[in-house]
Image (cartoon, rainbow, N blue to C red; front, side, top):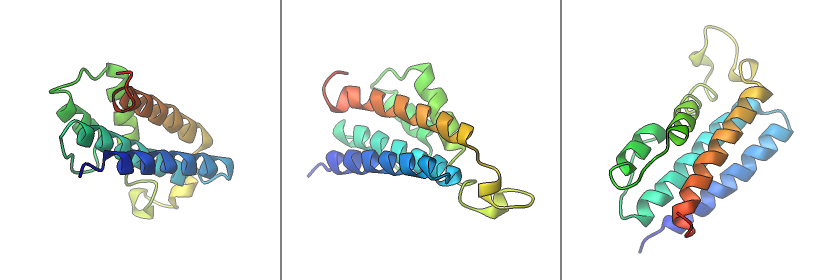
Length: 131
């Protein structure tokens, strides 16, 4: 049974959660959740194409998919941005002092939102039939 739709649906749900994090000022969690949202939708695309993708690097997963799909530069750039949001938003030891909430801003969360939106729309083009 191919579970790409489960991965896609959870990715979309995570995206919605990130919107709430932004609304309530949890910018570090929004950044992480947007990375996770994109990761799940990319993994859905892989599964839909018969490829199981492992790991958490959006850039690396997209490069693997690039064997069969043309991945535009802006999608890879979006992935690179979101890859930076996998560990630092969650752990204080990612910084010399302070906690992640001291470092992540609304601007970064909005940039992450735009990056995730681009990736998700790209994947949906293949998953939902317009790609």
